[in-house]
Image (cartoon, rainbow, N blue to C red):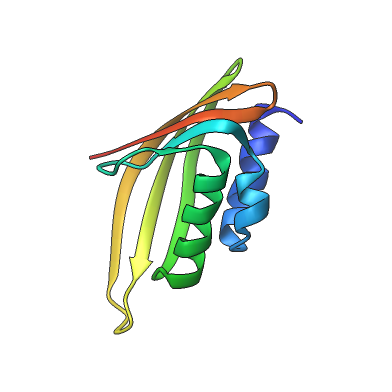
Length: 113
């Protein structure tokens, strides 16, 4: 599977709320670092984070605007929106730099602005 295909599948599994399949895209020793948050280290911790967010988090949307791939690295420009119980929508834009190793994500690092 190519880097681009792997990312497309990851986004699909995020949208489906599948924490286990999403987590399988990450190396056992991967780091997942959302903007303005502490990094999460290791696949089990990443799966636990996804599980909690998918189960307990707000309604959300994730839109990918652009993916640039160069070898085992990718840059992703995205928009992430949450929807509160009263229907208020908050959207923010960001980018993620992703490094693959042996077909899995070794590092996911987000920046927002």
